[in-house]
Image (cartoon, rainbow over all chains, first blue to last red; front, side, top):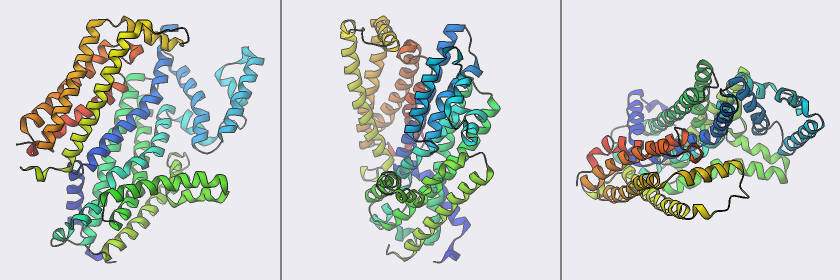
Length: 332
Length: 152
């Protein structure tokens, strides 16, 4: 590998052109639309029941009571977040819900939301407590779904970093002007810039809507948590884009590159989940990609979220270097 | 600019136009059928929300229905025509009709938000923003990124 040929000026120029070219080439346009629609649909699905709750409250009492709405959100969100974070299985959650139902039927006068938490078994976990009590719970839930879903979407943007030019043999004309390292890393950085910009638009839109329309959380809390969520999503995309870079330099067909990127990103997760039913250690397969770490990006402990950030960057570095090793040696 | 140099993004935009136009036409047919038979649908087995939606649909009235679905039909037609225009890189059929679609779709989304009852998804909500994504992206791209590609 010859990283000495890397020049900041060339890489910067290529990355800026690439991020601008992304929409024109089609992959960026498709990613932009899918990511925006996916992000806002997730928000729509999670915010609509809360809006209905607020409307019902306004009909019944004539005004909205934000603390009561927040408590209802926490009550519904707690088991879901525990399941997403892998702290409880679906069976345990169902058993807790049934137990709570029984308790409410035996003692209906004692059915306030706060009281019901006693029947939860393990009580509030620090992480769950942080996500639903200390931070705007609705935004936390949206971020958790986006952390899970966005890696599937990002390959629509990143699949064609090199493969299209491999197929058309167009790179040899670019190589008259610059080196392979600048093209490879420039395009990777350009893709990251575009992905980050799209994440910013999605998070800003959702936060603005939550702040202006529902008004259940104070604006500074929303804004602060939105910045954290945006950073988590942006950093998470980096290793997945690096995986796509590796695949893109390895094949000559953009379509094959897209299919392989999809199969790799989704396959690792599903093989880990399905494989663990047959053989428990198969669950560690998900650590081949950041799937096993990524929720820690929203952890309250700096050791956890910093560890997740370092892990994401380490994954990205490994995939990038493997891709670059292949790119330096292949026939163009 | 000849057709051989059509950027991939413009082709993608055309394909998305055809898909959305197809879905739009199917939606219009479905809603016309629903409007025609709305009085005959039994509401006994429905929950409160579904009943409220059905009542809101019955109360909507023919003029509102005509305005909303007329706008929907026009925007679907414009999508179809502009999609062909993008593929042929035409100035009028692509750029002008594409812009016309974007404006009509934005008006249609705003009108739907104001004219539909809350039970039918009316009012400004995040769904309205989802409906606005594609027209806004079209409007921006046609007048910036693909401005010089639609010149035939």
